[in-house]
Length: 197
Image (cartoon, rainbow, N blue to C red; front, top):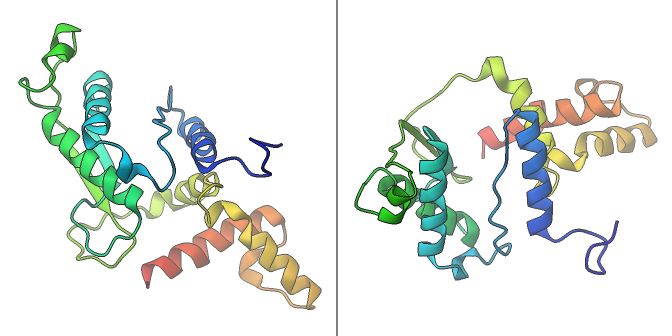
């Protein structure tokens, strides 16, 4: 398929398609995408992002937020920084009746969130550990749907299995099928490697 004369879709469209697949996987009714330009979100006014997020937080009565850590040091990606600050500000403001009174006129009510979880790519001080061992396979599967950002959705397990086969080698942990190679590569190599970064 060709998008705008290039072989690959632009990152914004790839992200949208990935988000739709992930929403479907989790049996969500809908995925909302703002379609901001990739790696240029720091050019978007935070007020625009906050307003859109506050509206959605109130409309959907969001009770849990998972986002980039707004206070992490040494984050390089401008999209992560902009997103983290907008989400944190919107989280704080969405529970206040004084902000965006037009929402109240439209029937929305202030809504504060019960829980929030922040993450980063860089090492950080751990302040909460949650055992997800019963859900790790689900986490692997949903990460494999994220083909735009990888590495989980880039079929690296299959690529490694095929390369080793050409060399007359085999890595037992990858299994025998392309699907098991991709799944096991994400679970046992990608996720484990990130734990030790």
